[in-house]
Amino acid sequence: MRQSQMLIPTMRENPADAECTSHRLLLKAGYIRQNAAGIYSYLPLGYRVLRKIEAIVREEMERAGCVELLMPAIQPAELWHETGRWNIYGPELMRLKDRHGRDFALGATHEEIITSLVRDELTSYKKLPLTLYQIQTKYRDERRPRFGLLRGREFIMKDAYSFHADEESLDERYHMMYDAYQKVFSRCGLDFRAVIADSGAIGGKDTHEFMALAAVGEDTIAYSDESQYAANIEMAAVLHVDQKRDETPLPLDEGQASTNDSDAIHISFFRDGEANVVAVLYRAIDEVNDIKVKNALDVTLLESISDEETVDFDVFDQTSSIQILADNGVKNVVNGVLKMNGKLLHFNINPDRDLTHMTFADLRMIKEGDPSPDGKGTIRFARGIEIGQVFKLGTRYSEDMKATFLDQNGKSKPLMMGCYGIGVSRTLSAVVEQHFDDQGICWPLSVAPYALHIVPVNMKNEDQKQLAEQLYETLGHQYEVLLDDRNERVGVKFADSDLIGCPIRITVGKKASENFVEVKLRHSGESEEMAIDQLQDYIE
Ligand code: ATP
Ligand code: MG
Ligand code: MG
Ligand code: MG
Image (tube, rainbow, N blue to C red):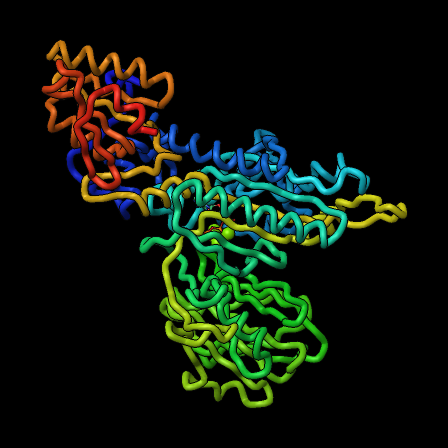
């Protein structure tokens, strides 16, 4: 493509409103423009990179036997009522009414739509297993849209959903998707970790998050180089407890329900994004029905929670949340975590005691340097960007939505389900967070908008112009080439070229008449002069 025909509005100064490296560079290099908070246009270069990432995702999905379809962004509220999520999902779900006053949601995720599709179309075990996916725009009215594409309100996601007759089949698919995700993110040139995570408000069992390591990441992961162990910090202590059930305190997370691990009872205190209200979800087991849960920050709040009861609390302060876990096996001990001023404080309460006596002395914080759960090495913390997540949903949605199939014996059963997401636009930003220098972006070849950037120093020089055109023509048969055919000063051209960040720059300068050019690698900065007939070999 000729740069004179492109729209690449680079900036000389750093954009004032940029909140992190990828946001700044994508704006500055002319890849994206903001239209409203968390809502962006992908300019031609940005869109090319997005399509590169999508192509990698598609290839790996198809290789793993997933089939692509496309579902609507506008979803009828009735389906969300069936699963109860119309109420549970909260203000993050964007809602609208049609001219008849009927309620709709803008798709934040597609479990409801796909389950309704499949329950009507898939009725026999003979069609199972089946995995469908789409790459589509998602809408979430995030409380704090920020960091450019990293946390948008309109963003692009690959979401896949699998359907199974039994748990073994789901396990198998889960592992296939896990492997496919490893391939996708490796091919995008990312340094990432797959971590055990909390299954959150979506409901379900096993889940892993894929975290790109980056300082700007909003998640903290706990891992150890010496062991296989890697977990989202909110999950870290859960594993710990799985190992030493009777003595060790637990974990958890602000704003999310916990895993439905059959050994534990989970009481989650949700913080509503707008109003300072928390709700409680409770899965009770008889022995501990009478536990009193108490807000450690405010001694006046004491609530008794019974089976299936939902209670509204006043929230403690802006940054606190609390989750109590009572253990089925060790019924007298309640473990929990209190999130206060961004810190996780773990505690362990014996309900036989008067709860009003719980003090901060009972609290413990997980920290770096703690031994790991499997006894190998010590815990390290790192910041991560959640670029993808795989979930075993089980029958949470199929039961609510009555999506059943007939098994081999003609018996009706709910479908087992899995779901698997990749933040495609977030991945784009995550790549930039890991590949840049003072001059701009340094794209990995796999997702670069163009592999080669041909930059004639002076377009008014006939030799240079002709050689640049010739290279553009010949190399263009094999590679994706951007030709800077603008009548700009060479300083501007070089600065733009570094900012845009194509992996290889071919500078056509003074030696054009001898058919010599300079080749520069964006990543390492290495440059070499060579005759044009050596170019092909060099690029390979
Ligand atoms: P987060 O914890 O960052 O809010 P999530 O857990 O809510 O993300 P999922 O429901 O797991 O997100 O969605 C699948 C993927 O979509 C995520 O792993 C992430 O890569 C991407 N994603 C989620 N929310 C956003 C957003 N607001 N902007 C861009 N990408 C997003
Ligand atoms: Mg979210
Ligand atoms: Mg998440
Ligand atoms: Mg997630």
